[in-house]
Amino acid sequence: MQKPHLELSQLGISFPTPKGPFVALQNVNLDIAKGEFISLIGHSGCGKSTVLNLVAGLLQASAGGVILNQKEVNAPGPERAVVFQNHSLLPWLSVYQNVELAVKQVFRGQKNKSEMRDWIEHNLALVQMSHARDKRPAEISGGMKQRVGIARALAMQPQVLLMDEPFGALDALTRAHLQDSLMEIQARLNNTVIMITHDVDEAVLLSDRIVMMTNGPAATIGEILQIELPRPRNRIALADCATYNHYRHQVLSFLYEKQRKVEVLPKADAAKSPVKPAAKAPAKAPVKLAAEEKRA
Amino acid sequence: MSAIPTQWSRVQSYLPGQQQLTRWLKQSLLSAAGIAVFVLLWQLLASQITTSLGSFPGPMQVAQQWSGLVAEHKAEKAREAAFFQRQLERNTATLAANSEAVVSVRPYNGRPTFFSQIFTSLYTVLTGFVLASMLAIPAGIVIGLSPRLYSAFNPLIQLFKPVSPLAWLPLVTILVSALYQSEQPLFARSFLVSVFTVTLCSLWPTLLNTIVGVSNISPDLQNVSRVLQLNWLTHVRRIVLPSAVPMIFTGLRLSLGIAWMVLIAAEMLAQNPGLGKFVWDEFQNGSSDSLSRICVAVLVIGLIGYALDRLMLQLQQRVNWDKSAQLR
Image (cartoon, one colour):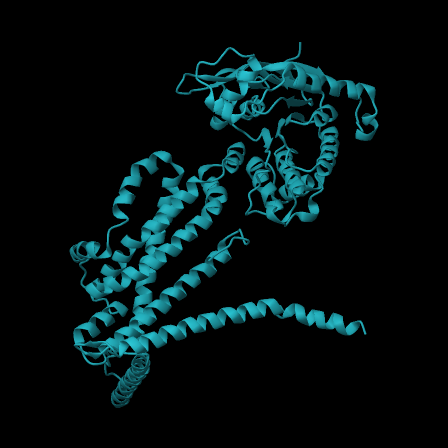
């Protein structure tokens, strides 16, 4: 059997707390093929971002590991480019310079000046941002910033593209537009992508597989859903498609029936004594999750 | 018909708007009123106070002393020009008589005027301030980037920050006399003492603000830097410095303000021929004009301090990438 491109093996992480280690994530096993588009979906605080940060190397696993092309990942690097949730462009650099910073760093010694310029222009064209190349991030809209963030990541020519809720902060129309752009780019470049999302439609529309995470603590993969819709996918055509709706239904049922998250009101939470009645497992979750978020 | 309104609106767009104009007018009127009230109160109260040097000077006497100082400066300049003229004539005459003769060109050793003292003060304060910034910004970056260094140095910074210039001065004086001994000194000792005292007192705000600016870089940008595997120098140059620029400038402005205040005290005691020495000499002199002259110096010191702050603000606006930032 062929070795997987990217392998998450027995992946787990725990954070030390005064009351002993807090296990945020455990036993995450996932093999990802080259060119595959994976979505991670789950309730907030379930450790999706932790998985992404582990793959990016921004966090260190306390159990198991991430293997990319038979090499263990233990530090961040441009071959695993990250598109951050809040774009994270440098506000003092223009659109062009933001991408340039990445290109100069990754292709130093490999490309000459004009090749670099062409490559930056090419990537800006790919996300349709050539017209704003000399604008500062503060002068462009949120959707445009996210496009530039994607261009910066693509310009690193990564083996894996990691996207942390890339469209989460955008309005619905802009989001749809960017999703279409991303599908086009993905069809052209055939990148391996791991994307975190909260949006069920987004997950079904874009992914080859949807990885659904259970609620924390000790979150892990609950179910994996293979999406066998032909590409290119068209959101309008799919809106009426029974298979599409079936997939949606499966994800929704996982999120809202099997892994229903009971929000504990902060007041009730504070009033509770340390000796809690043994409630249902999900009901306990948010209490510790708040602690996890603080640490993350 | 329609051409005229368009033309007019184009003209209007170059002019400040009606509202803007009234606001500006209102502001200036209020400022003028404030100054007028102050001058009036000064005049009224000054005449009530009798000192050992006569009655306390009112605005009129101070204005007179100002023109007196200007006249003195002009007279001194004329004397200087005359001195060089005489020297030149004498030397040309000597050379005409004997082309082999060795002529000497001597500098003019006149009394420093009020305006040359202003110049000396500015020169001294800027030297001290630049020295302080050159120490504080790099040190702040290095300390701010490392929580360990910060823990190590923070107590020292907190210890030395509140020390008065008057406490530093004797130490600096002794150290300069001990360490700076040269046959033909490039700088006067009084100048060095003033500069180092200014440096010692003014580097703390820049240092602290740089540390805060550097240690508060957004974690997202730090992650960008980590993913790109930027080396230390590129990380500092492309990420750390720009994000700390607003804080660094806040520190620089505070530092320059402190430097200017400290300078006057330092010059008084170190006898550096600047504004501080002017005030001190007038105080020791004790003539009937002394108080008015000191009042002139006070006003000039205030104005220069204000001008320095505005200059710093201009520089900040030019350097800061965030043009929308409210600076005041």
